[in-house]
Length: 470
Picture (cartoon, one colour):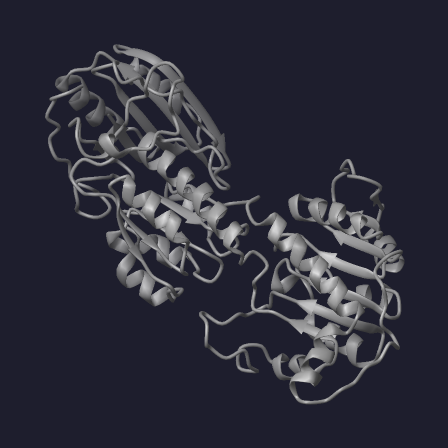
């Protein structure tokens, strides 16, 4: 493919010449310089080097990173030749709608909301990276229908969150924060009443995923007994034991900690009825999502003495950035919650360690780069997971087609009819919900072949977004 000039194409979405949504195809540049000389290949053959594919025909890929995403991610993208705009704070929906049209990719953490309105304004957007565990801040269905995969980092901050929970268990059982606050106010108050060792106590874990299972091991090392509840049957680590119902866990635990996603079925899963089933004098910890606990009911249980303490790292509504108030205008209960004794409140710092942010930056930046440069959707949360082995550097005159389409009957027949005159070296397709994704590597193509493929794929009835990589 070296040296084949690719004519510019007009975008149905943005007026630029890079990408098409329905009825549109893009072709990448075929020069040997630029990105290929700087690509740190994740797709290297152990013997022969993979060819670097170029995903854009005219524009330099432009990435927007918000919420102080790690500098390591910024450097990784810059090394690819991508243009990176990096900001420390979250953007509002209005800010995103105004500015996102110029970007091909966006990286966010938990505060920036990618809504349907934002996605409709994102005329060039190809991919979204959530540099965190959760993805509920993104309208995943709308993104998929627009041909935009979403990637996250489901594992990288697990240890950091698990360690914070252990810290909170000890701090709650020893009333550590109250004693420290008193000392800072010049009050000496040495007490042992209602202060406990955690050895021999029972920890109840709701959600035995990556965080919950790591926490289980750490808790047992302190001599705790571990119970867990999950909606699926899981093999426990160590001596942990799975219980059949949530009520069984609540009534048997001295400490209850949540590690579940925010889903319709988990909203307010701990409310007045569940709190009443907890042991008198027990503790509740929530480092999961703010809406999985009914906070006003929790306040009531703390005020009447049924619970001895609580630790919260997440809230139904959270400030958009550092320095902004956490007050009753944000959450109506905020001032009451702040006034309670033996209640630990932290500003969503569960995954905020240097180690976690570095690993998250690496994991998500690699996923976005693989998609932009090679079309791989492995690890996407809203998209079919499709990948092809690399085109080798010596394989000239190859083109990779990345075809996002509506999941409806007859599409593969139509596409394969288009590809049938050509040498399809490899092809893979999968679907998820209403969206399907096909990748195909075509060998021995000429400039005229590319023109033919572009025109015919552009006119397929199910086309959502098609990219040519070469």
